[in-house]
Length: 136
Image (tube, rainbow, N blue to C red; front, side):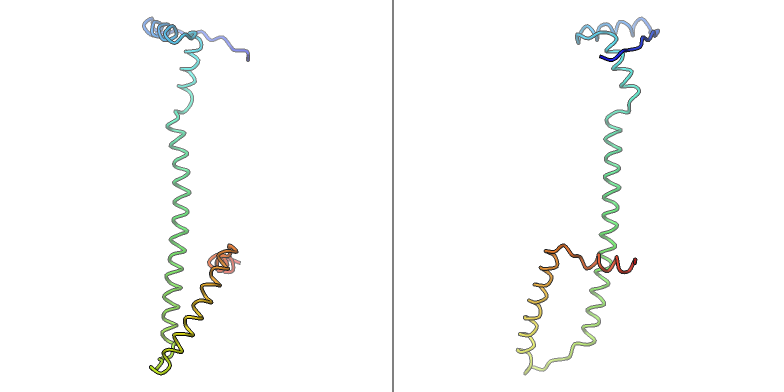
Protein backbone atom coordinates (compact mmCIF):
# COMPACT_ATOMS: atom_id res chain seq x y z
CA UNK A 1 0.00 0.00 0.00
CA UNK A 2 1.42 3.38 -0.99
CA UNK A 3 1.65 6.27 1.43
CA UNK A 4 -1.07 8.83 0.98
CA UNK A 5 -1.00 12.52 1.75
CA UNK A 6 -3.58 14.15 3.92
CA UNK A 7 -5.78 16.82 2.36
CA UNK A 8 -8.20 19.05 4.22
CA UNK A 9 -10.97 20.60 2.20
CA UNK A 10 -13.98 22.73 2.98
CA UNK A 11 -17.32 21.73 1.51
CA UNK A 12 -20.86 22.94 1.93
CA UNK A 13 -22.82 21.00 4.57
CA UNK A 14 -25.24 19.68 1.94
CA UNK A 15 -22.33 18.36 -0.16
CA UNK A 16 -20.83 16.69 2.93
CA UNK A 17 -24.15 14.95 3.63
CA UNK A 18 -24.23 13.73 0.01
CA UNK A 19 -20.69 12.39 0.35
CA UNK A 20 -21.46 10.61 3.60
CA UNK A 21 -24.67 9.09 2.21
CA UNK A 22 -22.94 7.92 -0.97
CA UNK A 23 -20.03 6.39 0.96
CA UNK A 24 -22.39 4.62 3.38
CA UNK A 25 -24.64 3.33 0.57
CA UNK A 26 -21.66 1.86 -1.30
CA UNK A 27 -19.79 0.66 1.79
CA UNK A 28 -16.77 2.85 1.09
CA UNK A 29 -14.87 5.43 3.08
CA UNK A 30 -15.46 9.13 2.46
CA UNK A 31 -11.76 9.46 1.59
CA UNK A 32 -12.01 6.79 -1.12
CA UNK A 33 -15.14 8.37 -2.61
CA UNK A 34 -13.57 11.86 -2.52
CA UNK A 35 -10.34 10.56 -4.10
CA UNK A 36 -12.30 8.83 -6.87
CA UNK A 37 -14.30 12.01 -7.49
CA UNK A 38 -11.11 14.09 -7.68
CA UNK A 39 -9.53 11.56 -10.07
CA UNK A 40 -12.63 11.60 -12.27
CA UNK A 41 -12.55 15.40 -12.29
CA UNK A 42 -8.85 15.60 -13.19
CA UNK A 43 -8.64 12.78 -15.76
CA UNK A 44 -10.15 13.12 -19.21
CA UNK A 45 -13.40 11.22 -19.51
CA UNK A 46 -13.28 7.90 -21.31
CA UNK A 47 -15.43 9.45 -24.03
CA UNK A 48 -12.61 11.91 -24.79
CA UNK A 49 -10.03 9.10 -24.89
CA UNK A 50 -12.37 7.13 -27.13
CA UNK A 51 -12.86 10.18 -29.36
CA UNK A 52 -9.09 10.69 -29.67
CA UNK A 53 -8.60 7.04 -30.65
CA UNK A 54 -11.43 7.33 -33.15
CA UNK A 55 -9.89 10.47 -34.67
CA UNK A 56 -6.53 8.69 -35.05
CA UNK A 57 -8.28 5.80 -36.82
CA UNK A 58 -10.19 8.18 -39.10
CA UNK A 59 -6.90 9.91 -40.00
CA UNK A 60 -5.42 6.53 -40.94
CA UNK A 61 -8.45 5.72 -43.06
CA UNK A 62 -8.26 9.12 -44.76
CA UNK A 63 -4.63 8.48 -45.72
CA UNK A 64 -5.58 5.04 -47.02
CA UNK A 65 -8.41 6.50 -49.10
CA UNK A 66 -6.05 9.14 -50.52
CA UNK A 67 -3.58 6.40 -51.55
CA UNK A 68 -6.41 4.39 -53.11
CA UNK A 69 -7.57 7.46 -55.01
CA UNK A 70 -4.06 8.07 -56.30
CA UNK A 71 -3.67 4.43 -57.30
CA UNK A 72 -7.07 4.42 -59.01
CA UNK A 73 -6.16 7.56 -60.96
CA UNK A 74 -2.93 5.88 -62.10
CA UNK A 75 -4.85 2.75 -63.08
CA UNK A 76 -7.41 4.71 -65.09
CA UNK A 77 -4.70 6.65 -66.92
CA UNK A 78 -2.71 3.48 -67.56
CA UNK A 79 -5.77 1.73 -68.95
CA UNK A 80 -6.68 4.69 -71.16
CA UNK A 81 -3.14 4.91 -72.56
CA UNK A 82 -3.04 1.16 -73.15
CA UNK A 83 -6.37 1.13 -74.99
CA UNK A 84 -5.36 4.12 -77.12
CA UNK A 85 -2.03 2.50 -78.00
CA UNK A 86 -3.71 -0.85 -78.71
CA UNK A 87 -6.23 0.79 -81.02
CA UNK A 88 -3.41 2.54 -82.90
CA UNK A 89 -1.17 -0.52 -83.40
CA UNK A 90 -3.65 -3.43 -83.57
CA UNK A 91 -3.99 -4.58 -87.16
CA UNK A 92 -7.38 -5.15 -88.68
CA UNK A 93 -7.79 -8.88 -89.20
CA UNK A 94 -9.80 -10.25 -92.08
CA UNK A 95 -12.36 -13.02 -91.66
CA UNK A 96 -9.90 -15.64 -92.89
CA UNK A 97 -7.50 -14.94 -90.01
CA UNK A 98 -10.10 -14.48 -87.25
CA UNK A 99 -10.01 -18.04 -85.89
CA UNK A 100 -6.21 -18.13 -85.71
CA UNK A 101 -6.09 -14.66 -84.11
CA UNK A 102 -8.69 -15.64 -81.51
CA UNK A 103 -6.80 -18.84 -80.65
CA UNK A 104 -3.56 -16.91 -80.29
CA UNK A 105 -5.37 -14.27 -78.19
CA UNK A 106 -6.74 -16.96 -75.84
CA UNK A 107 -3.24 -18.43 -75.39
CA UNK A 108 -1.73 -15.03 -74.72
CA UNK A 109 -4.52 -14.15 -72.27
CA UNK A 110 -4.03 -17.41 -70.36
CA UNK A 111 -0.30 -16.65 -70.17
CA UNK A 112 -1.11 -13.18 -68.89
CA UNK A 113 -3.47 -14.51 -66.19
CA UNK A 114 -0.87 -17.11 -65.12
CA UNK A 115 1.84 -14.43 -64.87
CA UNK A 116 -0.51 -12.20 -62.88
CA UNK A 117 -1.30 -15.07 -60.50
CA UNK A 118 2.41 -15.78 -59.94
CA UNK A 119 3.13 -12.10 -59.32
CA UNK A 120 0.26 -11.73 -56.85
CA UNK A 121 1.30 -14.93 -55.06
CA UNK A 122 4.80 -13.47 -54.57
CA UNK A 123 3.33 -10.26 -53.18
CA UNK A 124 4.99 -8.16 -55.88
CA UNK A 125 3.04 -5.11 -56.91
CA UNK A 126 3.72 -3.34 -60.20
CA UNK A 127 2.35 -0.04 -58.88
CA UNK A 128 4.82 -0.21 -55.98
CA UNK A 129 7.66 -0.94 -58.39
CA UNK A 130 6.67 1.98 -60.60
CA UNK A 131 6.26 4.31 -57.59
CA UNK A 132 9.63 3.41 -56.08
CA UNK A 133 11.39 3.76 -59.45
CA UNK A 134 9.77 7.14 -60.05
CA UNK A 135 10.80 8.40 -56.59
CA UNK A 136 14.38 7.05 -56.80
